[in-house]
Image 1 (cartoon, helix red, strand yellow):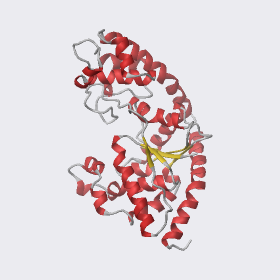
Image 2: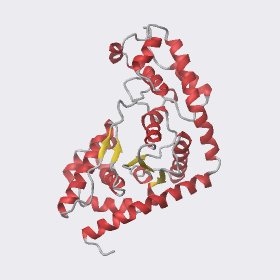
Image 3: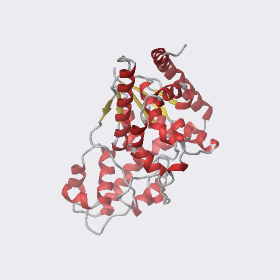
Image 4: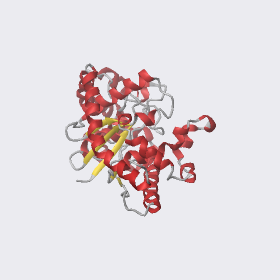
Amino acid sequence: MDRIFSGIQPTGNLHLGNYLGAVQNWVKLQSSYECIYCIVDMHAITTFQKPETLIGNILEVASILIASGIDINNSILFNQSRVAMHAELAWIFNCTAKIGWLNRMTQFKDKAGKNREKASAGLYVYPNLMAADILAYKATHVPVGDDQKQHLELTRDIATSFNDNYKTDFFPLVEPLILGEATRVMNLRDGSKKMSKSDESDFSRINITDSAEKISAKIKKAKTDSLPVPDSSSELSNRLEAKNLIGIFAALRGISLQDIIKDYGGGSFSVLKDDLTECIIEELQPVGKEIKELLNNKDELDKILKDGAERAKEISRPVVNEVKNIVGFLT
């Protein structure tokens, strides 16, 4: 069976965009692939994190993934820092990747902003760690969105360069897994921005752990325009907030945008919002309930991550040991 590796940042307070854009895809992939899912806490500290906050976020994200349907008996779920092979391979890749490649990484420019000189070295080289995350398991596929394609190309460049340098075919060229039209969930107050936990307004997003009352209030206040619900898909490009709500509704129901337009086009947004609210509550409330139950037993959550790390080591340790042999290290 082909092997998937994918990672998620332990930012805590995951929202509907994370759920529809990533988590639900992870759940679906389990039926067709050997899946390794990683909470990337080493990536998280490329910007400063309060230790107590980071610990809480790791456990919260683990609870969200399990409650959403990640099967810990078949898939591997662990936090990155427990598997030292990631860091060991990342250093070798630091010595493989070229400065020019890293200079082209747009995410560093976005995250560092105008204060590039004050950004951590880790933030600059973290694409090499991302490559190590994937190649430590010789993953064959990585599910990617638009913002990750560049990093996957870098991973392929690093694998190719390593193989060429050492006259080997050890590392595979990992393939992107395109999952069809991605569910791109946007800000409820501004349809031109992605839904994000960093937005100051809590009404800009639906958090996975929101109560039914909060979900209802947020959807009621979600921005729309004064026109009826679009009655054709051609209208969506110019009506971003309407497109966002229709897209969320379609993703939750597992149908197309056109199907939602057929049912609600030309009608009042209040009707669509009422039905959308009911749909979101029906989807997220069982998940939120299980998250709370899991977080009430943090020792068990920690044990799940430890067990996952041991399973991850069984795969990655021989891979990294062989890399050391290829490089010329004494092991």
